[in-house]
Length: 415
Figure 1 (cartoon, one colour):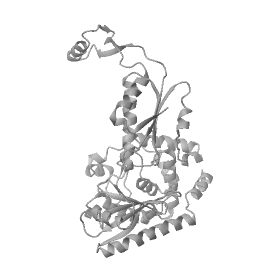
Figure 2 (spheres, helix red, strand yellow; figure 1 turned 135 degrees about the vertical axis):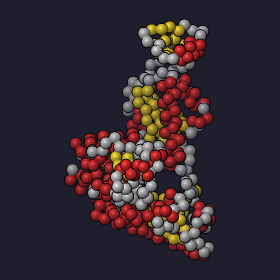
Figure 3 (cartoon, helix red, strand yellow; figure 1 turned 90 degrees about the vertical axis):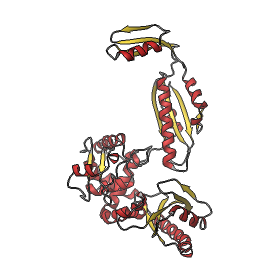
Figure 4 (cartoon, helix red, strand yellow; figure 1 turned 90 degrees about the horizontal axis):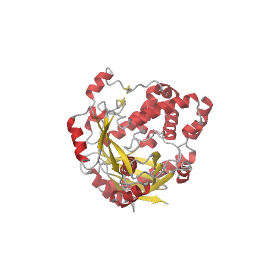
């Protein structure tokens, strides 16, 4: 594995040109906005955050987070929007717990986030106010582990476990940093993950005496994830609250496979194309939809696409069509892909519906018989049955229904 990681280390190291381009862009942004802040007597300063601010950014990722730290509270989003409009021709306002903005400069996407300048977590008026403190914590603690943190991030990206968005349910960059520091490096992190149980607890700063005390103090709504990581700068917060059980179990399984046979492929982010999907079809039937993003906010768009996938899959299943495999992929740049590969067999016009068991409450049995009073209901073994007509016998009929429903207007069926 050591030889593999040496090669990966080279991959996560930015070139001199990339570093120079980032620094130049940040300087140019500052030169645009700082004079406007001074002219309008706005007491605020700039703070470079995110992975760029921490020094853990990966090559070829052209996004920069810049926090505008206001010394006084107020309608910070409105103040910032007015300021940015005087510096940039085009800005995009994005919804959040406090609205923030996106501008483009020198090929970089810069997210500009208004925050209140604070020195202690308890001074925060909004969750984003903590962010600069998180950056400073990472810079203090990453030290010699910065390459390990980058390798960890690339690994999580490669296996598809990176991202705290609701439609991904994975691990944020911040969580990956905490875990890498907590375990003492990438290799030790993987070894630690193989020992994770049904739930896992980590408290790097030892805010609590034990796990029990932490769970009593942190809100139950923040403990739905199987992973509880006490935020190093805010002990009332679970940094890993967004991690789903599905991604948690997937990570454990994938890490075990990787340790048995480490290969470069685990660090290569998979991009799924329509052609890749078509190769899976064989003699079955494919329905492939292109999903247009429905919001300027990535999380909202991704969540919509995921919900479309879930609902369509349910529509097929509820009408007795066999879904052999299905999936959803979105690279956050182009249209998303939502696909369903079905058994091509046409269904019979009639089918036998299984009713309540004989030992269930009399009310349920009575309701079942009443619902199908015009049909023959019979008892066989421990269940009641009835023969009914199907609404749809061809999967194309369900697809026609999907195309007619307004909520699926953002989907286009590829022929």
